[in-house]
Length: 81
Image 1 (cartoon, rainbow, N blue to C red):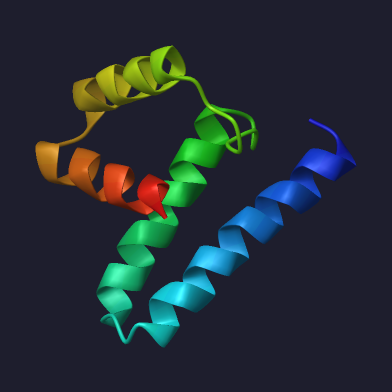
Image 2 (tube, rainbow, N blue to C red; image 1 turned 135 degrees about the vertical axis):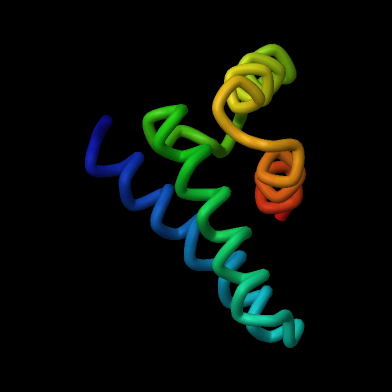
């Protein structure tokens, strides 16, 4: 991981949070989506900008082994931002 990728991730992380807050979503929803972005970022070493379908399939398959369907959906919604 490079300094550039860390800066990109921080930007990709902060921008959706601002949008969520401006949309007036509940704080728990904002926290759930931000947790999803952090979890996906950790899985892909903060390289989340250009993920391929195969990478996402692997991620969500691995996630199901440790988390519930509802966590999986929250991660998907968080990623769609």
